[in-house]
Length: 276
Image (cartoon, rainbow, N blue to C red; front, side):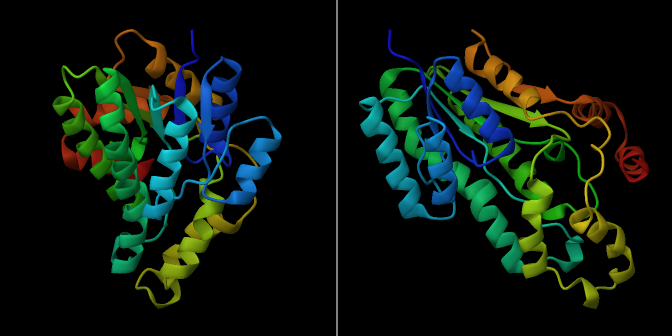
């Protein structure tokens, strides 16, 4: 029997890298894509099938899909949309360009890739579309407005797609991590520096704590933080459960916020998040 195949984005580090390595060891045919060719070369050195896929580059994205289908003979069992970035800053300080740039990757890229793969999954009569969301796709948090907006939008788009795919054999699944050991904070620095004029902000004094988290050394894990392997464990369930759930929560804060959002009035939830 041929190995099942999966396309994973954002494999340079963190969640995507752990998922690619683990599924490869489990016998999956893994296409471990990265935005940077240097990262792809490093993964090929590990024995992974890796090539560029940049969500912001439509031509490259189409070429990546063609590469996958050429190597599988025109099939694909699953896609894990994982690559994303953050642009920290107060909502009032986010220029239009910052939102345009982050939505291009965190939402439009996911959508474009998914649309290109749905016809393949329809023809073969099965497939799993797995989108990596976040606890910040369930609730908002200060300084994270741009990232939150993309994840809220992706949650809605995924929910509708799941309903529309009913009866096709294609499952649409959301993975909901909370704090995970990744490089997302480090990778957010260039976007913060490009778009946020914090010194001119009415909140300039408040940026001290945010900049401390961005630039300061991380001496210990965040509260409830788990390794990327915790996400991979849920990804394996999403891929291999006979009847997968619509959502798989990862970390205590995600379970807590998912429950709180259902039972608390909005003002009470705002207070809880502000205190946390």
